[in-house]
Image (cartoon, rainbow, N blue to C red; front, side):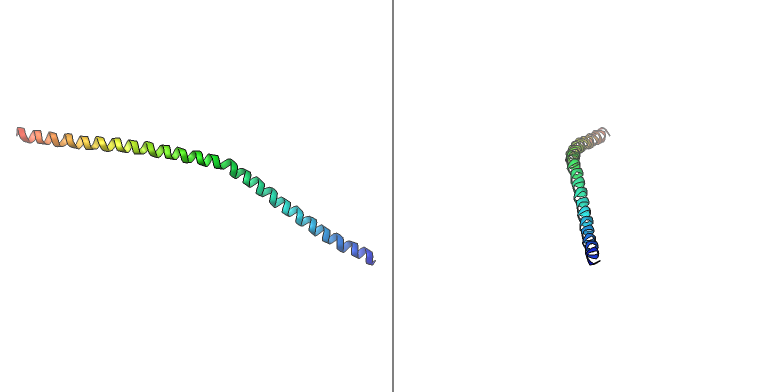
Length: 88
C-alpha cells in the first residue's frame, strides 16, 4: 500500500509539473504570436507617419499660397480705395 500511495503522490507532482509546463508553453506561444503581429504593424505605422508628413507639407504649401493671395487682395483693395479717393 505504501508503494501505491507513493506512486500516487509522485504522479500528482508530475501532473502538476506537466500542467505548469504546458501553461508556460502556452504563454510563450502567445507572446510569439503577439510579437509577430507587432512586426506586421510597425511598417504600417511608419508608412502612415510618412503620409502624415506629406499631408502636413501639402497643407503648409496651400496655407502659404492662400496667405499670399490674401495679402495681394488686400493690396488691390487699398489701391482701389486710393484711386476712388483721388477721383472724388
